[in-house]
Image (cartoon, rainbow, N blue to C red; front, side, top):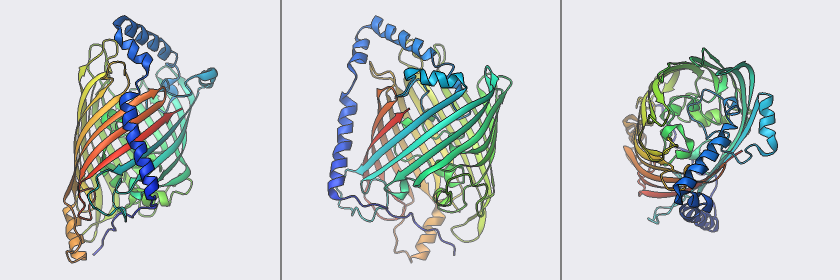
Length: 470
């Protein structure tokens, strides 16, 4: 019988002193998020006229970046805030000078800490899930885009990026030194009615949009891994890809892609990263073509309309995946996600308001450990007075584990290993926009059955994450 190995254990084991120091840092992050409101913004909201004047001034400043924004990498469904929101901004006119030559540069640095604050007697070593021991992670990314040709809405663009990623626990994701993360070409036709993307890219940023509203700053708890499990490419590795998207005038779209699959194994992304070297691998052993199609409707918030984004899609991987009960088969996944703005809370700033969303993803249980994922979320943008770009997200999620995997482990271990059928979580995130290009996110996640193998008590993971945009 062909079996899959359980996740690898932790790579680092911080001392009790380190855990205490970083736990205090995370707790301080919560206090900072709740108390460190910039005085000038709070004062602006005490007077409606002053607040509107502040909004008008902000809109005028944003207008300066209207010619720079289209120079960012186009065609993504998951992306960070625009070039207006960056630490560098246009200091010294450098960004404008680059834009004069059709070039855009940006950077992203993120780091996070997660720790289970419940003292429930469960051993911290060896580590089997994120937060069991103090878990830290981070990434560094540099993006460059060059407009080759085009005017107005339609452009030809070359995109390149380099990235580095690290973590103290392999379950967070692969660890890579500086690698070439993206090298692709984008072109649009007929006022963006048709868009193509060709080259090496991570398709998880161009399909599905697993985060609330496609905003990574909203990430909380355990997001769905099924698309990557089925072979969709994800950072820090990229695969050869061709995508084409047809956009209707009313907001409807259909996007189709074909890419080389990640290595078809239980450790697909991790194994791909191990073999990635410096990047840009045309082929990998056993990795064949994967086909993706997504149909959706996307409408931005405006003074007269509320934001809405509905999308459904399918992924089909022609590679041979090993079944838990022996033999091989192709892999596939189905998904449906939706986000809708319930209410707009600020005149003149239609993006501010209360939103709801839901996600449903499914993959065959014969070859995927995580085979069902359901999520319901309620989130808000700029809900608090004087905090126009702060984010809050309440998420409830369910992960279903493969019954075939459960049976296989029971047979292999003669029933001596405890396995779980499902996983439940509830997460509350608050992301504080401390200053232009600086976000501090704090979250609490209550997790029942934190790992597939083992009889662990529920965890209460406290997380602190900083995001710096340049």
